[in-house]
Image (cartoon, rainbow, N blue to C red; front, side, top):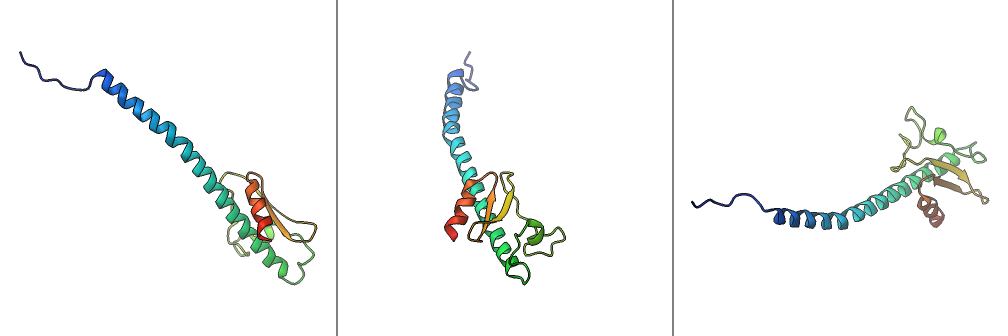
Length: 122
């Protein structure tokens, strides 16, 4: 009797699983690093948008000596300088303030890079 061989042997399956595991071990850390980098970049972009809107709000007569808040620049009704308040992609929260020189600063509770980018822009 001449039977035809069907299916894969255990060794062949184990080799394929090992190759997939090696590829996953290489790809997953890179994916995580790229995701974190893109979240930081989005956070920095959001912080720059908030800073620009806050500076515009400060230029309005009567606001020069005040500290802007998210309620001032992005009210819930969508009538502010930003239609919708940006949110950090990693779940952080933005804080608007002024430094000793009176310049607007925007910081994120999750990304220190957003605060550093703001300092570089000045």
